[in-house]
Length: 404
Image (cartoon, rainbow, N blue to C red):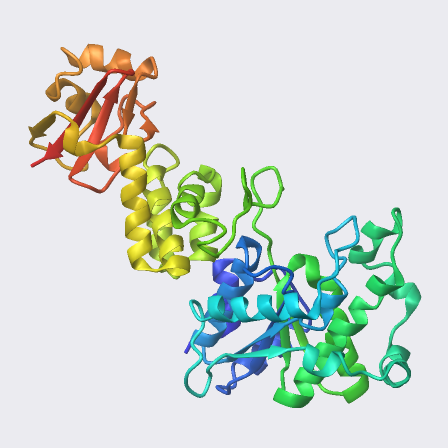
């Protein structure tokens, strides 16, 4: 079986790591290596920011290793300062318990909880809420340098507005989680987002210094747009994995409309599609990218919400942007994915000649479904793999085209 680290590297999951050669050797031994990712239960649903670490867990499990999802029932009562410029609002125990229950259900869509390498979910409230503070300081605090902690990016961002002592404890708490999971389940590796690097590294360092055994860290890249801003923001706020917060249709449409330059990355990170198929689908940097975007939206929605909801969302998208095909005039023509849009325009009666069809495209007045045609040499396959689609010319000409 392929080394899990190779799989993660190929698909783009490895952002930062330490002792990489030793980790590679550990993952090559043919043994099941327990590893974990932490999730703060600050809401009753995971969001798109959690998606990449979850997929990394799934790939690790498929390579034979055991995932542990740690929900922060204890740390969630403090709040992680990473990536924030303000103090998180603290949740009650009841709110956290409710959120943890909801998150458990969502995890089951991505990870198998059966068999020898079946995933387990652990709540750090089990060991954090009953800690003796003096004992904790004596046992754990001695391994941390305040000077070194203040150089961590997660604290630097908070220094101007004021870093509370409450938040300052977060790094120790997360490091202690890693230590406890190492003792209880022999966890050797923690994974998480790039913004968690300081906290994850602190845990690996604590285990190495206190227990004198190897511990490792991997962070995954954040999902960013071409401007370097986090993806996953919609008009309604965050892009959630819960259908109650973000409908499957909204979820589908978000990924149907991602930037062309991000499609390949999203397919590698957010789907299980083979890399060869992804590269073939995204090799054309023109209107044919629309087919890849449709596939991305469908595959991601299927993973999060199931095949039935993904099919429904795809149908809704076609109906919303292509009109109700049942009520449209229909034109049948001989053709396939290689048929040019110019030929379709002429055959459908939208243009009297190929010259007129070319001018319509150049003027920006032609659409296939929801996508504008801007390349006069574009073919049907650049926009859809279906045999039926809607052709638009301007605001008044709409026809259902059926390829035979």
